[in-house]
Image (cartoon, rainbow, N blue to C red; front, side):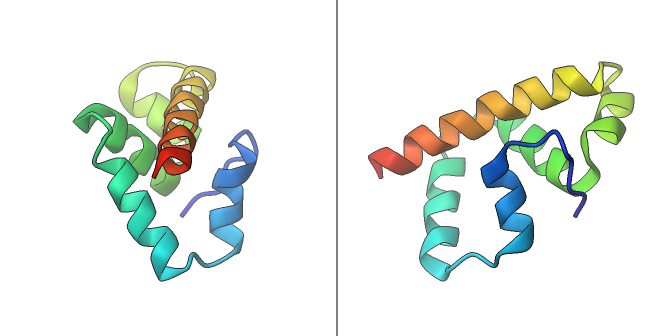
Length: 82
């Protein structure tokens, strides 16, 4: 997994701290509420990093980070509701 220094803080935490089984279940439930594109982008971002995803998609790394930040925010909102 690639850690992007521009990633939201909570995304960086998951790279440094293992998630509990309850947290993993909650994240999976929240991911189910994402569109296929949103889910694919955020997973690709965490595997490859912003620079590589940007090259693959023909957009800037900053555009990738902004999109992923919006998805992370959506996940956070869903987690609060769950």
